[in-house]
Length: 459
Image 1 (spheres, rainbow, N blue to C red):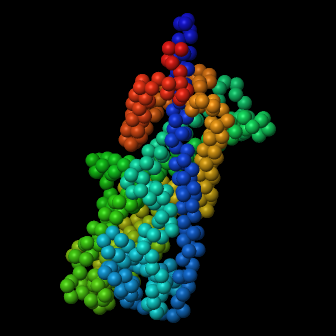
Image 2: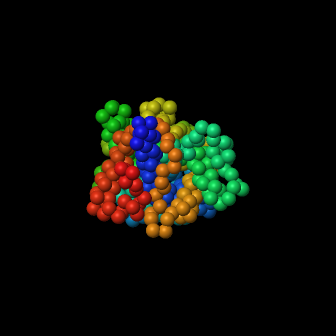
Image 3: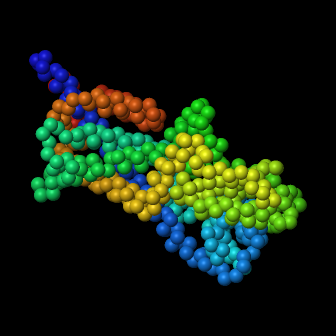
């Protein structure tokens, strides 16, 4: 080997490593990316789906409504052993009132006719269609373990996208065809290659944003994020996004116990926590009347106090999180204070915008369609990569790609992957495990090196 050839050999080894990890990331990520894209695409249209599902409970009243305390009592009576957890302000006085009651971590949403007090419908909160889709998307219905698996797949998808972009990067003299747009009439081989490469180019930025903006919900990274915020003194009293189904259940169970502790042994009203309510009018009636004057973005949830002398909590749960404001109201209806979204720490605002865009709620239907296009692109990436692999793989080998041409500066990508491993601990652990497994398996089973397409470094 001549001295001039040595740098090229080194660059080729880097390039081969990039190809190898792009291929392995794809093998692991493809089924998860398809799953997350399908469930995420469905969840994008949550407002439209729920509007259709719950249409029978709108415009049901023709006259004056009963007092909120009476409606809440009817909802509590419909679920034996429950207490009031949340009262949802109806968007229209003609709509059925949604009231969340429950016991422990289990919430039940009850639709009550505002004029007659009749219970129209009730369903366990976690059994609602879009809640099931949410848990399928973020946890595979497997709790913390499912969340960890989804988080790991998301991090590896980042690696797959970044390495793919690195491999796509046009060489000197490259033409626009096959780089910015696909060559549709150049044969099936180039067609699928171009579909894969060009799609990856156009959706990478959006896909990376969707992955990063979804990390605060992940169990492991979300906990890591909360610890960093606690250490730096930037933690919020109560974050405005889910920390996983397990953590959410813990919060509901804690709040339920606190609300029950507020009940007097002589409490009436079907077990409602009325002992610390002002009389007359009942505290819930006064708080609802005061909350209606705030004009928060719907839906607005009103929660009872969880300790003596604490106020009632009023929170907007608008899909577009930058519109979410909250307030504290005394039992007599007196407004204690209002917190606007703009008053929150910049980290909470940044995450709020990220989550809103992630869910397609920030810019209405345009946001939904852009996100849907990115998700469709991810599915197309998975399909085209599978077709490319299947058509090119040798009959007796896994088909990991061989190196193509030397590429300089691949070390930058390696440094970027190392940075990701540091910022995303679960990815770092899985990367270390993959490297150790790779070395152990190839030493224990030399034939595995040939089957997986690895070249001997001496050649």
